[in-house]
Length: 57
Length: 145
Image (cartoon, rainbow over all chains, first blue to last red; front, side, top):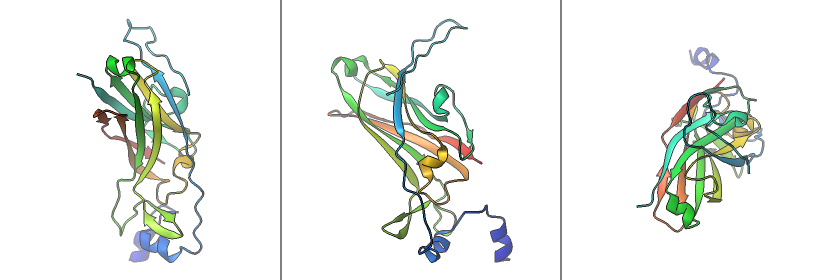
């Protein structure tokens, strides 16, 4: 029954206990930081006109 | 009275940050967007703020499929993926958006177990430096499939 339930779990999903049991062989990539951006939102304009302008840092 | 509010939070394609997007593939570009309204006095007084963008794994049952990561070789529950953007100026007026983005959703959570597939949410906070002012967003749910 447990095996049947486990078969319904998507591949790659591990419970904490399963992960701990495999800790010696588990490898996870390093975290990737990402980047920030920002942009102003202008006051709403009449329909049909863009009301937004964006910029990136 | 000065104020700062996060009026909206959502996930988006970094190439189209003004439009919320609720479903992603693992390799899709991914951004967390905070829409912010700030009092003009914060610009006039040249204040700056710190922002935190969070991706949250809501399943935190230690016997289920909670998010986890490796810390010093140990498996550790890690239910949020936090990104900090510190010392941001009020450079975009009183009504603006800030976002944090990765080339792929996978890049954001590749070091987190159980975060590659499922229904998760994002949220964020902003805190004005040298001030009592802060704001916290609602949640925005999204799916990775």
